[in-house]
Length: 186
Image (cartoon, rainbow, N blue to C red):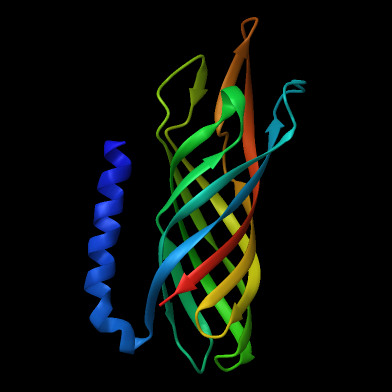
């Protein structure tokens, strides 16, 4: 909980520092949504492969060059994904390069890609959890009326999320996640 609180305070301070830069193409807001996760087991393990749902929420910032449509966005999200023994709870930091085309401030369509960093808060148990993970985000969405963004992102993990040991044999697993998000930028 200390890590979450510290990250939240840092994000809030960054937002207040960014307020004067609002006129300089920097917008900030809040982002939230649903994680839909499927576990991909290595080595033929027949463990739980069911889909599970979680959530994410937190502050975000976006810097865009208006005429070109190229920009970058980043967020600091409290995130839960997976279920039961393999549930992950932690801080997620996606940083995406974003290209937007559209009709000015009324409607825009964007594509985004970039790294996603996840830091697991859960303490050690019978599952060997990776404390930090990296994934590749690939996404698309729409921007509506200057402030609202709706998007879909697929996270392709670059390594195992955790390792499960059964009968002396270890099986790696990756959490492959679809995210459906909504963001409101001020």
